[in-house]
Length: 341
Image (cartoon, rainbow, N blue to C red; front, top):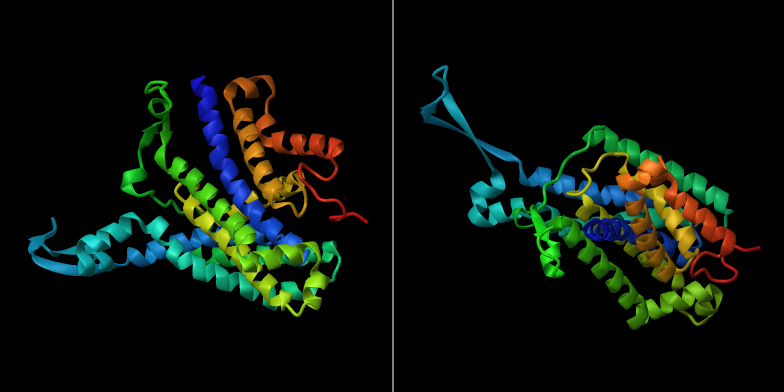
């Protein structure tokens, strides 16, 4: 029972990342009709926003202290982060919580990147075949990946969770099952964070006038345009919002998976499978498929399962996708007419 609960939690936390990326992908496809293969790169850029913010906070002030000497008799250099030297306890707080605080920086940065990407490149491919969209966005993803590799190197860069969330939570005690089920605090934080972001996106689309116009544009773009609404501008903002969703997902995932230049590609392929399984253009389908496939992948990674089916954890998502698409060609919650001739 304990192992099952742990695998469900692992699956939910991994599914949260899949669902957030797939949600942004579906937003872009549903509004603009663009298959964006650069979306995984946005997830990676969000992660490196956290890395950059941490590097800026840890810039050190070097002070030579003549009263202390090294073993060779030279004055000792004392290194203190500028933020801590000038801001004291608040500086220490920022250093400790650099990952969640970096969201404040990542949101405007990712919004600007998303808008620039849409205005500078994507809009020229709205009416082009999906194959052209895939080629150009995949090429853009490779360019972004190589830029990150040039500036940050090829090795993963670990990011620490805040001290308050660096240990393990006794999930079993919370469920009344004793203390036999410890689980990392930050993974729980990420799960609730992903649920919060997903809820905020759905609330924005469901309960705001702006979101209602966007949903109407997803259904019938031409009619909304005939009503005198500048739907193009709204869709540009939606592309920026999709970039923000992917970016903040990447920021908060850095303590779980140290970011490197290839992480965007690793998540991109899986997230596209999630989108297809959920149903192209279906936001609820993307979220449901993200959590479903995350849980299945988690159970497939158990040693008991791999001893019977070696390597099943690497292919389980694709096997499930094949089965679902054979029985439900539009995916779990796909709409009629989406990507159908």
